[in-house]
Length: 303
Image (cartoon, rainbow, N blue to C red):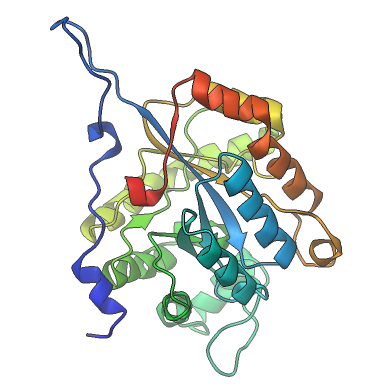
């Protein structure tokens, strides 16, 4: 067993979201116990660029962000690791990449440019998915990080072969939490109708997705949000989402960042929207809404 795989011997314990501490019943034996609303606010793309890294840390130190997922093949990986070590309260996970960027394995070929190309590469067996993703997890562990959760760039673990690989890596490395990328029903303003319909169309994948994770001992939050809102939210939409937050544990996926020349020159559709998300996550109105609604901000380490 490798040193990294020894992490699997002592994975973080996870009571199910709905089993976490309920509000006290008081003296009235007939009063119902109301589950808490627990919110993990996660930023994807840590390590993508230095300005994105700085924005993520700013959203954590000045806003409601509690966690982030690190891109092992991001060009600002070393900068992200440095920031993570300076801010240990920021929960770190792995943002596993199979689309965009380059492989960590020799000869460091570029990954497929989009999901269609990824499907073609997997069909032709041109990409050893599990080996590629394992190399990314190993790099993050070798950098001294102790990741608590896994997700994938562009939600590629919705594809069965990728999901199977991610589930096996979760067990192998003792990283128990895996993102469930199925938005809970919501009606926050600003969500394009096409994005809402696409989110609903993913429901047919849900049953197999949870069956695979359960069979490998993986854990998920009770709910997930953020797919529909990516690139489309400001403070108003974020407050509307918080107003609809269900009891239990929820992961909210975000993409904050400062937008400087480094990000503007990068290959991504999310540029100016990252600054808008950063502003929303640090807005006083957002923080006041969290307090008013009794939402408890948590990281995966807390669950």
